[in-house]
Image (tube, rainbow over all chains, first blue to last red; front, top):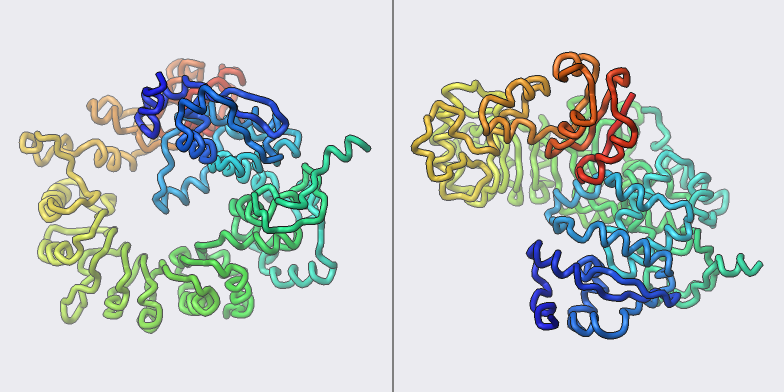
Length: 189
Length: 380
């Protein structure tokens, strides 16, 4: 079993990935909660992937959980992250061709992702994004970023500040100067 | 009070994006975007539109620092030109301010500037070249007075849209992609010299079988070609098409281009004047110009038609006329919805005739998990 698990590390074959995902590893949040996650799914996090690769699958499966020490990795955030990777682990690999990358960036979120990321608790949303960034899960960071950007679309600066709880650290004069520089934005279409 | 304290987080040593060299003495609320460091903030803001970046620059100093960071390519189009016009000329100061704010721009694409504002292209390119030191790729179209610009920008031009042949095209040594009317456009009109070499992609609006020699010369000097596209819609569909395809296929046999007359080992057996000679990709491309109604009508022409006729359908709009003409019993039921949503590329389904719709919200909701590409169903 142990040999098998190590042998299939790094193999991109779909069946192998599915088989690998049946192996469960444990992830520990910064609050101490321990959660199980399929190996292939967990390896969507480059942080976890690197740990698994350096420690060997065996060690990760049989020994202590992987500790995710960043304070954003709360119990609730980690549960959400595991839900996301368990849904997306069999996504086709990302094509890094520049044109495809551009298309992907402009692509709307899928219905599932929209529902997943649309959480009422903004602190949790930000925890998920920060934790995904710490765990290096690019796809999930992108989902969070697209969600925030779609929320602020069409809003005024003041509305954005209120929505995202951002402190306005500009003086009135500084703000006016920026408005003047960007006056072309408000020109009629 | 205790709750308030737990709701806030100290960020004395590190910010959430792991930049441990930034000392932040402030306390940030967990539900505030202020908790993120500049890198994370820039990453999030990289998904907003170009114009919104300017709109939100004054949200906070952090936004001001980060909101333009990810602008690495810019598309200039008519609407933008209209906004920076002062009378009949461009407000160069305003354009320069835009360019200075977006200092990381590497690629500028002017092909979206229409005929009305084409004359401003050189000025736009000048301004960005002077203010964006990372600029290295220009995608443009060549207009009447482009010959001077080409001498200046030629080395930066990597893509060219529609153009008239210019001798100065020879200065565009990094040109990798171009679209033009016909193959003769890439030859000097007087000397007949080939002006473009080492292209990766070319798109022609039309092609004729009497350009055989030009095509040979072009292919000989463009061995790096990965894609050769002829806009089939501008060709007559009978003799010329088959001749052209034969000719091109022969010329490019040794190149790995995307022009493929698919052969699965039986090409010789296929009738040259039959559409059966085409592989699925080309067949799907040809059929992509059909109306939706015709696609349904022609689905049963052959198995290849059945395989390919819906391959490019990304959105369907079902209205009363559609229901009356194409749906049995004139009713959209769950079975029909299930079938239609199986179209491989379908992303958007709009049903504009609630009266005929027998499906519940649940039926519609249930479709999404099984159709990863389907993103939107709208019902009016």
